[in-house]
Length: 192
Figure 1 (cartoon, rainbow, N blue to C red):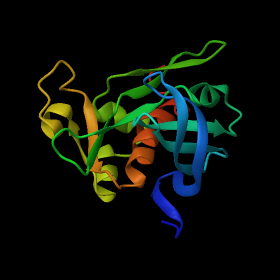
Figure 2 (cartoon, rainbow, N blue to C red; figure 1 turned 120 degrees about the vertical axis):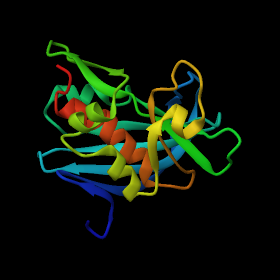
Figure 3 (cartoon, rainbow, N blue to C red; figure 1 turned 90 degrees about the horizontal axis):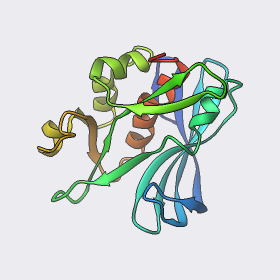
Figure 4 (cartoon, rainbow, N blue to C red; figure 1 turned 30 degrees about the vertical axis):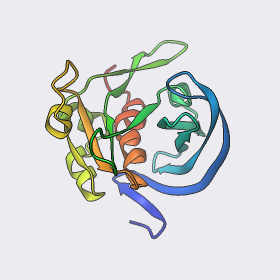
């Protein structure tokens, strides 16, 4: 891993970039407002890079999103500012956060190219990420990987969905979760 990298695996390097202040827009919950947070540069050996952001909204919501991408592939641009991931506080465990790991998939190789997200197994997350094993990737950065039932005690209808559980102050986990479950499956055309 390079000195300034937050995380590195196979063909990608994730580095912390500039802090974000005064970001205006709409949160995942649909509230217009301002956010601040941390941006990341995702560099690839594929000849493109993407700028990611972990944002904290005035409303208290937290999210991870892609801000922009210099890839020529249109499929990468479709996900920017659209396929976002919420970062939740763990009920009853202050100091911990979690993220559900639904996987981005291309709807079809049509024009315009569109992406969506679907429930994924551990094997599907790994295949979509080009062979990067999610359990090992999260363990390396101090996060747990498993189902919502295993990690959060969830007994609802989404209990079998995969998630990552991590200390709230972790800078790397939201960006790694987004890279593994949103960016790389779209790049790899997984599911089409």
